[in-house]
Length: 192
View 1 (cartoon, one colour):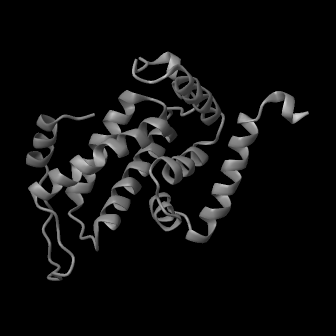
View 2 (cartoon, helix red, strand yellow):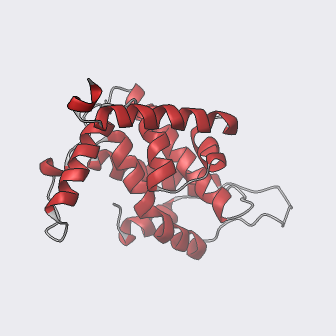
View 3 (spheres, helix red, strand yellow):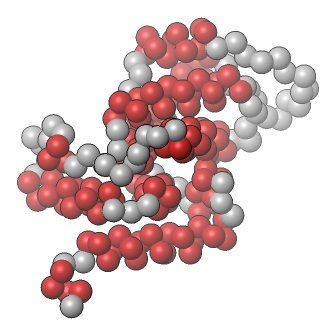
């Protein structure tokens, strides 16, 4: 994840576009507000990017680029939720662009391939490994949906805004993704 020094450079080097809009009902973020927003959202965004790309280093790069583009855009937002959804939408598009350029999402690192936290009990580490393997077998769009809905706790409307879907479609797509994940996680003996 980018540190505070990188965040300072990001803010300092990003020149805000000129704003001709005199609408004062939607506030544009200042430097301090941006820092506060970054502190609240960087960890969940990095987790999301890490899970959907399967690459921690790429997640770091995409995180930095997403915040840079978000800050540089200088967009006005109705509220915190709208602001957060805009950031996640930028990050999702960046991840999809990276995948199209050749970076594959197929290999999601498993818990045993990473440093395992000693404070996590073995049974929880095993569950994470099983879930990691199952998520690896899903399509990238299904990973995005499931992560946003269950890890991030996003509503169907928020997911639709982030992923560029119609809100009415999210419920059906989530249902299909859950069923596919459940089928993957189901013990082989139960499938027969």
